[in-house]
Length: 190
Image 1 (cartoon, rainbow, N blue to C red):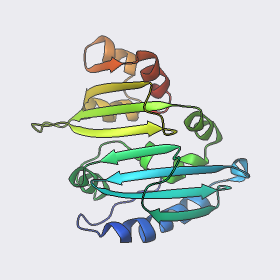
Image 2: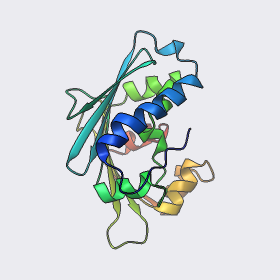
Image 3: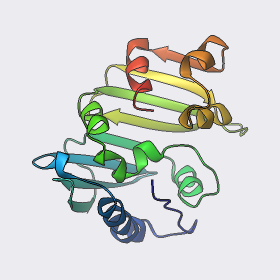
Image 4: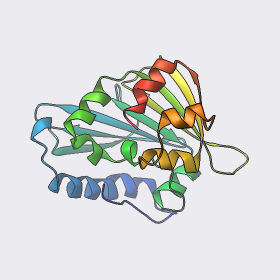
C-alpha cells in the first residue's frame, strides 16, 4: 500500500479528483493489472453527507464522480471528522484494505469482494465517549448484516496479523452481533 496522508482540512473534491487519481496511478504503476481485464469495480465513499464514487475498469481506467453510484461493489461511510482524522494520519483506524483502490489489484481479493453481500458495521473504540463507526456495504446489499465492536488497538493488531479474530472473540475483546456467518466471511477480507 502506498501511504495517502493529506492535510486535515483538504477540500473533499481536491482529495477525490486529484489525490485519489494520483494515488491510483502510482498503485497501478507498481502492480500487474492483467487479471482485471474485462472487469469493473465501483467503490462508493460516504464522507459525512458527501458522496463520491470511483469506477475502475480493466484495472487501468479510473472514473471519479461526485454523487452516489447505482450499484457499488463496495460502499464505505464514515463521519467527516473521522475520515479527516484517518486520511490526515492523525489516527490510524486500519481501513486501508477498504479505502485504497490499489487493494483491488489482488485477484483473490477482487474475487472475494465481488462475491460478498451484506453490511458490516464496525464500531471501533478509540477511548472517546462514542465509538468510531464505519459502515461497509458489499455489493449494495443490506442483508445479511452484522456489527463488530472492538478496541482500536486490537483492530490494528488484527489488521497487522499480530492477533487473530478467533483469539479476540474468545477473550471477549471482539464482540459480534447479527449474522455471525457473515462476520466469519468478512474476516477473510480484513
